[in-house]
Length: 532
Image (cartoon, rainbow, N blue to C red; front, side):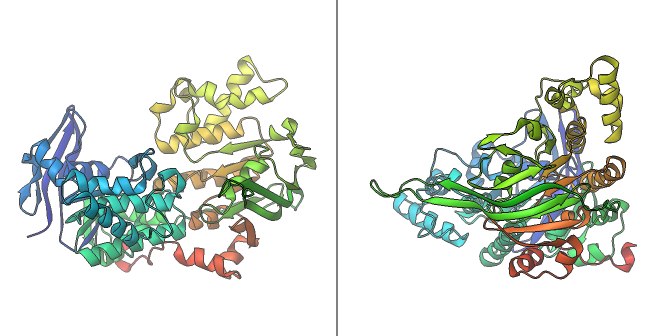
């Protein structure tokens, strides 16, 4: 008998059909990946297993764990199963963790709630599982709080909480989406190791086939609440039958063709930039230490060029980006745009700052939900001495919306009425509307579905041809950087360790760290004959 057996599972919420006759099974020691675009029903399937469905939800069918139908369990019975028999790793660790509790207390909490052992033994078990997930207490004391850890370390704490009682089934919902490639590889290896060591079944929810191609035993493809194709990983990747599966596969490795860059003419010049942060004193009379986030960084971005910046979390990418935007003062060095310094002394030069715009990772979080699109994308107009008004303003709004593949009628809508990919198009329209000299893309597509990501990349290529864009593209997704940039900078521990033409750096990396990043990036196998 399978560990988890889902048969003909259907789900409605307030009468709307969400899942339609879902069938899948997971054996002990098996990894099953469920993949598809946002809205395909992946996460709702996982929540149905946990019985954490929203109000108004009605489920039909059979959902059995070790022969026990979870749909017939009371809330008290499910509370006894959650954490003990079924563990779940959520996508965003910072929201899954309690910011006012130490990591040790949060791992212990799972054990103590189920009264599995007394506090002393629970503490020892918490220490054991934190060490098992790569957080040994001699380096990461249990007294630390979530904000004192990196994103990958926080995800390890969430995994430790989920496996504290060694559940038979582990559900991981997009556990690596926002992580850099090396951390992503470590988390995936950790999950594989836990399945092998504990013999648990793993249900892996993801939107990226490349993430699970080398990990899953079986892949389930979902679309619009239905399973459209399923099979062993090797067979499915080489003998795809459904057009939607082939579309996901092709989108994962999507390539774009950028127009040729114009003759080199310096636009952004960064010279020997250093940025230090003061650290707290380690004891009462000791001198405060310092952390060097950016260390002697120098590079030039030419007008009309597309430059990539890659590196692990904590390498200094964000600090350098803030310094370029004039939002972060530097202790040493010079940053100039078009020959004008970003800082005058230690004061940001606002006349230069207005020539730059940013597209952020989370478009929804960067917009005011109370305002309509017309107001949102014209926010940069306040930087202009004479902002357009009347028909000129309306024409500019319409032009930008059309340029990013939307309709002029969308100007009257609110941001919550759009999908994630459409919101990112609106963010790009906002960045373009005053025709800045430089745009900074800060992890702008890392959280998007592969198909949406492919369309945004095509959009950027089209905008480069139309508007002769100059941009700095910051990302941990090496496959995206490889196709959307002319040159790339590789950053490690605050330093640029390698730079050069993008294809040359990826094909023939010189620095060991660059090779490490490239080797850690997930790859899809070549499409087989049956998938053509």
